[in-house]
Length: 50
Image 1 (tube, one colour):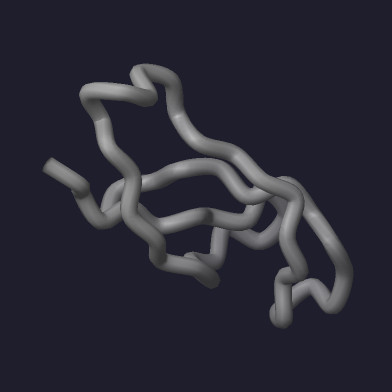
Image 2 (tube, rainbow, N blue to C red):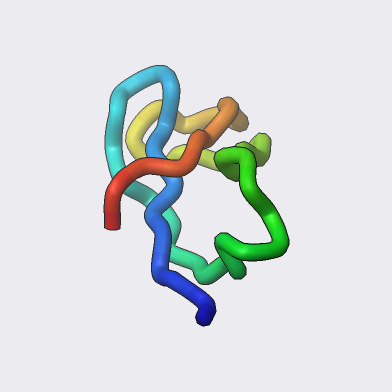
């Protein structure tokens, strides 16, 4: 039941990270503060389409 999701940078809209999550347990969209190699700094990454 784990689905593959991508994390999209808020600054440059680049897809930098791919991960999995269980959509039955976690109903809301995932977001994390991660490093964006395109921007060169830590920014918020939100769940996008895989």
